[in-house]
Length: 280
Image (cartoon, rainbow, N blue to C red; front, side, top):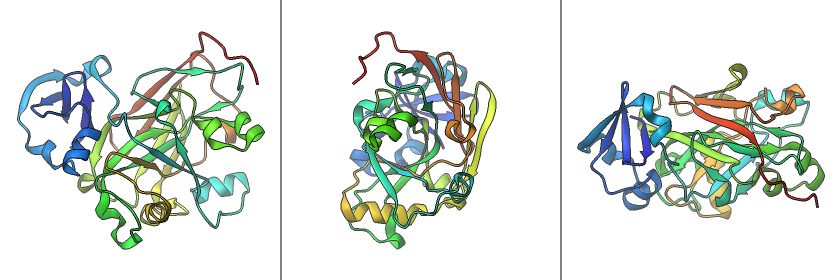
């Protein structure tokens, strides 16, 4: 059952309605920090109901305090499309908390810094229990659910600086949500579909069964070097079909939609930055 953070509190999706729950948590991260799972969502009493059509009016970031780990080049199809060799170790990075943004919130294209702003549709893995020095055989036991993610990236900044933090860490470049689905409700946790559209045009369509480093292995590797806390998110990589692959990048007025499985889609409008930073 999908869980969504709203201005009225946590809600679960019930058909065409948002059932706002009688729970003392402002967002999913608070629930996970307190309980370690999403189990309370299904049994919680309903305090009010809203039509799902009002989602854009009330939605909030589901995991606003998350540490977001990302991985580059983690789909076999992406490696094949770009002609790159398969990595022998995950290409890991962390996004700053200031990159977090709510569903439906616009991102600003920093045209003074970049002319190659790109989208990356991804399946996000939401941590429920602390994860540190855990083997692949136990990694899934620490997962609370999945979330839709878009790992926005400035390709030219990446090429110029070789620094993922600068290319991927701009304000708003880590939208997540709007919903989190408990891992127990995922039909096949090792084969989750992820798709993207730009202005309604299909761009990406992949499945996590194509990952170079499967989820359990990826989580285990990260846990050797860092400690993942409840509410943190691990992005799993993006399939081919990004702007980099197609030679076309985002501009003001575009709208990117990402869908993971059958979850409520993540929509991100693109606008021009109102006040441009001076080039370095």
